Amino acid sequence: MSDTLPIPATPSAPVRLTEFSHGGGCGCKIAPAILSRLLQNSVLPMIPPQLLVGTETSDDAAVYQINESQAIIATTDFFTPIVDDPFDFGRIAATNALSDVYAMGGTPLFALAVVGMPLGKLSEETIRQILAGGQSVCAAAGIPIAGGHSIDTLEPIYGLVGIGLVHPAQIKRNSSAQAGDVLILSKPIGVGLLSAALKKGVLSAEGYADMVRFTTQLNTPGMALSKMTEVHAITDVTGFGLAGHLLEICRGSGLTAAVDFDRLPCIPEAVQIAQSGTATGASPRNWSGYGHEVVLPAGFADWQRNLLTDPQTSGGLLITCAPHAVDAVMAVLQAEGFDQAAAFGHLQAGPALLQVA
Image (tube, rainbow, N blue to C red; front, side, top):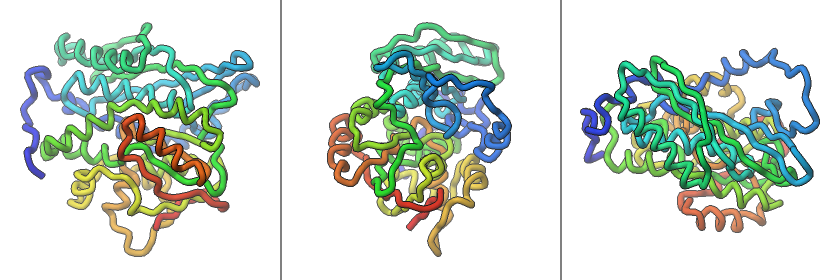
């Protein structure tokens, strides 16, 4: 790796934002095993029939029907810094938050800001740059930030509440996949590994550019894919890694996923970092939460497993579609700039497992 980024903060960031983060981006999510225990006795006292999507399958957002042709999507996502540049941090957090709306097949309407900042440690200009980054992404999505809430915290925290709209018949859940569906991923994996390298000061300039490029790419194809009946399920890949979010589809749909590791789209430098023995702190936590549901082939290397469990921040759309629709889905993704998208496996009848070859 050449042209490593310098450790000193840039003039626009007098302090390194990642120094405040015990786990940046979606890598700071509560581990899946712990989250499952925390929520196991959480039961809604009443579920109105208009609530089309709730917490039952760990889907990306809640969906509430308001009339025959419209349903509201509501979601929230926020985290601690994954990069040092405040404007980039704001952009990444906002892109990640809006992703859940697109993953449900919806169109964003507006957002609310979720802001927690250590006021005595960050300058007002740094905080303004974080907010400006988020505003720039919402402007690109064609929506306003219509309000929000802020508190004084020990770590910088930023994100959005995303509100969107979808036709009830076009909702793309993570539980509606079908046997025979092809698996497609719109963005390459490895963002968590790039973040780990950045914190160590060994990420190349090219790696950083890839990291920002993919994490600030809005998952807008979800809007077009929602109108395709051959697309059966969509989710986005974030903190639980590709394996974790694919398993959510398997559990919700009652199917087995068969994945060809060599066909997975991966960020080249992330592969190099993984092969060097580096892994994020969240990766082993993810594995401990769902590793018993994953079948690995003999000789499967630790670095390969670390890529499967690597926490993605603002990751790609994980799409399941009928085999004859693959070309049409890929055409939508390519037209919107997702040139790394790839088909990498399929779903089949069987228990909720992930089988890797």
